[in-house]
Length: 222
Image 1 (cartoon, one colour):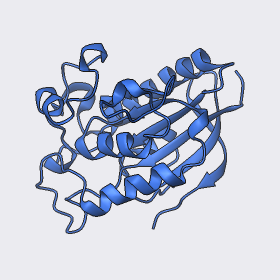
Image 2 (cartoon, rainbow, N blue to C red):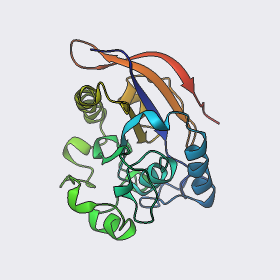
Image 3 (cartoon, helix red, strand yellow):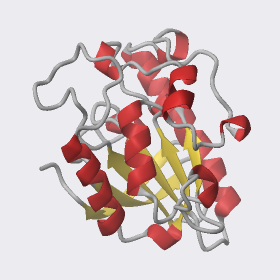
């Protein structure tokens, strides 16, 4: 497989649970600081023209970070206010990259709630998992399930990279949670700050697991 593909890992911007570490808030929204962080991400992220797919955890804070932070590369179909761009990147809501724990702050809202809060998204064309947001089955918080979700995601990303091979837009962005990054990448030592990113050249081993090249750009934990 080509090693010219790039993966960008983004941690969500500041949520309302972050300042006081209040884990009792269900599916927290972004704070005002988080909104500004997301807008800064949109301005600062240097690979907008190369992104073909944005994979986002379907929690409020990650979804909002993705929509604001990648407004400069997501396709117009994901915005009703003439934002986005023509022939831009696809947005995929992926429960496999949701937060790792079953605490209220790491538990998502029902799809019906998200549809009412994000009415501009083309919900009729988006595949929605029927189990989400329940923290059961494959979404249970035990490590074996978290690891399996990460491996399944890596295999799908290989397919997605191959589908985009040869196009201008062939990078993948994953907008996820600090505690789940290690399961996406297989790197337990990677720390990424709020609305910051780490970028990698990637390939895959014989088991279709992700192999990270050297980190070539990182906005570290702040």
